[in-house]
Image (cartoon, rainbow, N blue to C red; front, top):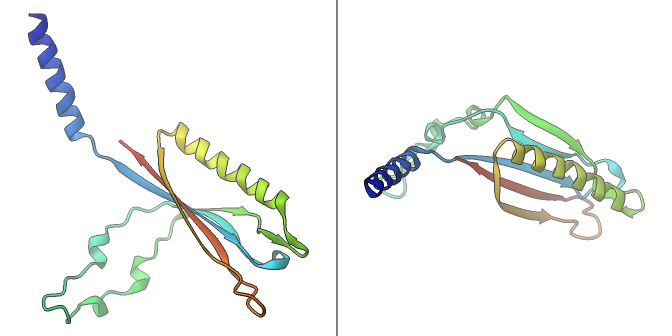
Length: 149
């Protein structure tokens, strides 16, 4: 009898797992690499769900596309959270206090998401940095990928 109950319990648990749906969330940090504090550094979190199918078309012969019928402006979301963070550079160069402050803000958001049940499962970053004399611009972007479910 115990074995039958164990098998039934395991079958029930496996059915629950089959119905569980994983949700995903991305939070992006953009840290400016512009001297003098004139850049705009932010943490961005989307607040709107959107269906990618509305913006996807198929090519039938590899050449013709209906992408021209889709307006880019329709893909823009209206609701998102924006947290101000500090720029990497000050007037005299790299500002380590700004970096530590940004780390504290990012950690606060990561802790809050963990408390909400989100699991951080991947971090992806990239940089477009100062290309030398005359450039003076760039960003450091990091995407934090979360899942729940």
